[in-house]
Image 1 (cartoon, rainbow, N blue to C red):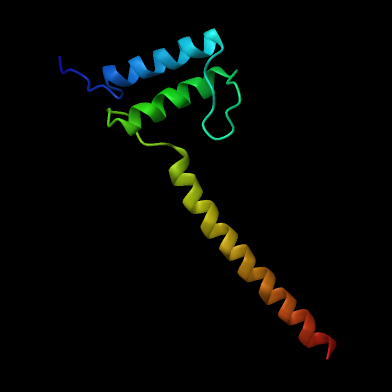
Image 2: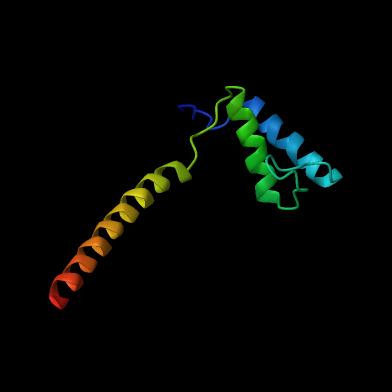
Length: 93
C-alpha cells in the first residue's frame, strides 16, 4: 500500500499543541490587540501561523484565494456605480 503524505509536519502539530495549552492556561494572547484568546479555532490558527513563520510544512491559507476574488468583484461594482451616476446626470440636462 502507498503511504499518504502528511498535510502538516510534526513541528506544526507541536506548535498547535502548545497554543492549545496556552489557551487552556489563559495566557494565549492575539497578535495586534493583545486580547486574551478564548476560541479554540483561533488558538489553532495562531499555532499554524507560528509554524508557517518558522517554515514548517503547513498548507496555504484558504482565505488567500477568496480575498483576490472579493477585490475584483468590488472593483467591478465600483465601475458600475460610476456608470450609473453618469447616466443620471446626462438625463437631467
